[in-house]
Image (cartoon, rainbow, N blue to C red; front, side, top):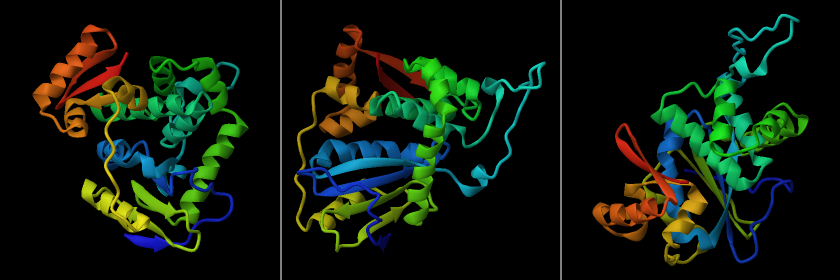
Length: 271
């Protein structure tokens, strides 16, 4: 854990009535970032009234310097079929491209990338797989492809890389907290820590003990996070897994969610 100065004027200030701003630095290919998602969600569910979140997409330096892979991508006219190109930085750029279709779309896309990589073990560095993901989360795939190749998307990703550099983040995931007092230093925590550590930082930044808010209705929770595990639901509502499963099955019968049985976990996803 370290303290850093508030970044330059290019960064936004916290929204009205939310005294803290939290920058979350993620690499879609990082398994620890995937493991941290339930902690971040619980923090938003219980204490989201105190902070806004800005997700910053980045990647390890060696990924930026990696060479593109072009398996069978060359066309007869000498051009390349972008759908068959692979690169380790593609997932981060793809999330920025999805963002052009809305913040919720980008969140669904990021979650789906991680599902494909860590649960289905698919090659998400392939642009064709990223197009498949775009289709599955109901993005306009043609628009997604155009945005992925656009200068605007490149600049958006470059902005995230600049923030990563300015805040001296070199470990993923990392979280940086700022409060509304510009004279106070921010607190940076690199890596994935127990939930209580992040609550302790909130208390330190707020100068008071934060109050836990009631979780929203289950349907609203899915609308916000798109996919959740039974364990997460039980944790948010402080109920047993059995009771959580019963409530989730009610939504399943109403065809509002779908149940996916994956290795080592059961995932519930907005339909």
